[in-house]
Amino acid sequence: MTAQQLRAILDWRMCSDPWPGGDMDSVDDWLDGVCREGGYQNWVEAYHSLVGAPEIFPGTLDALRRLGANA
Image (cartoon, rainbow, N blue to C red):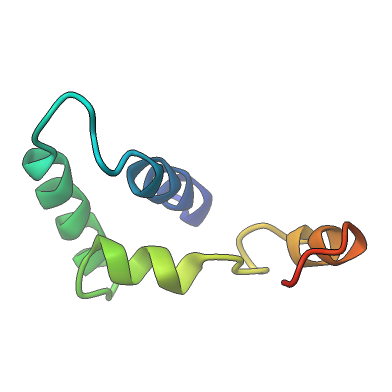
């Protein structure tokens, strides 16, 4: 899985909390395993580490700054 793919899944997971369909334990367990393979303690740590990472989405921070966001 590429860093961009992981970031997309982590964004989806973070925005899906709380999940209207109920329990997300199996998804969280899978994501924790994927993220541990990448050197993170769990998916939440990976998410916060990858937020706004310019090496994953080149130009994102510059685009946000141009729009006046506090990035």
